[in-house]
Image (cartoon, rainbow over all chains, first blue to last red; front, side, top):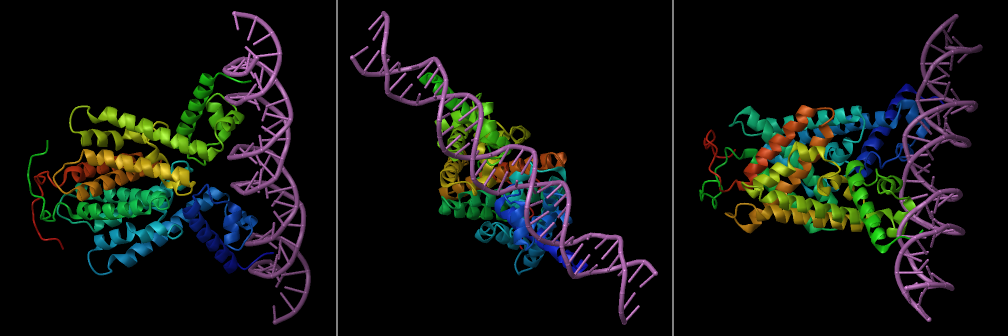
Length: 210
Length: 210
DNA sequence: TGTACATCAGTGAACGCGCGTTCACTGATGTAC
DNA sequence: TGTACATCAGTGAACGCGCGTTCACTGATGTAC
């Protein structure tokens, strides 16, 4: 039974939305087309009327996930206080760890991406690059741009690793999981403004490095 | 046809070995029992004579992978120069990125672990903890132990994120992939000895933070 | 040491199941007149 | 505006396939005598 153009567009959006959530929750290989279609209130046949393959849906769901994630980031950016602090509090947190379905696609599917097709992995790389740019833009401007970019890259890589490890250990070692987040949050705060921030009180012993 | 106890033990070891490599290459869910058995020169029936389930094999393969990985770490540790430098050069490198089958299980399966059973995820947490301890042991001793542990946690989390991202982007954006490794390698070098190392030449402008 | 036999590691066919994808069909939509 | 009909989004049965696991069987091993 045919359906309004408008309704059809809604259905497509519902598929993308459901796919994004389920892919983030269970992994791209772990969520099936039947489950996704059902979550969108449709049958799998409808999915294939809208997308040529599961891969194509995955690419679109990934792109949409990034879009929403950046919207969240912008909302958080100027929440009072430093933008970097806001970003890190948002990204490296128990809230982000526990929000599989709604979290950033970067952190959810990183280690699966290498096994996906080119379209999917290219979208991932774009999202990563954008995320790095967002962080770079709010870093202290003191040192050279190259240095700033390196720190932004390291911050995002560390954030991804932190959430991945925190999720992997959350069930069997909840304390350890929290500890990872706290440690990474603190160290990244320092990395983000290291070159400009005065040394912490206690340090200052200056043996030359090795 | 029955087989020597010795031969049986060899077969078991071959299964664990093959499973470890294939799980790291394709993911735990991505490598099948048929493929693993074949790689070990056996049939899947033999696998079930040795292990009650694929999960049990996965747990053992993970433990074995950590064992081998720590042996590599120890070999690298006293390779001349600073131990931390040796560790980081080993862990955050294109070599590690490109060595799926032989690399560290931590970096290979992080984001899959949360979806595996308790035995598997507990083994993962143990391996992570050990890795953190190894790093902590070679960090500068200047600041408090709590601070040292936090930096060790952050270093391992960042290393895992760096390898994961580098692998995810290696095919579609090889330059970006390399860039991530270089950036993380450098920043972690600083994190590993931050509190003690004299400020880099160019920095030193000391506006107070924010 | 030689013989009889229970053990059990390993084989390979078969199991039910869920996967991604295809396809004949339906029937409301939206267009042509 | 009203009618006739082509379009095509969505349905649901069916496809081949590979998955993890089971099981009846084999036959060399290793033990008991």
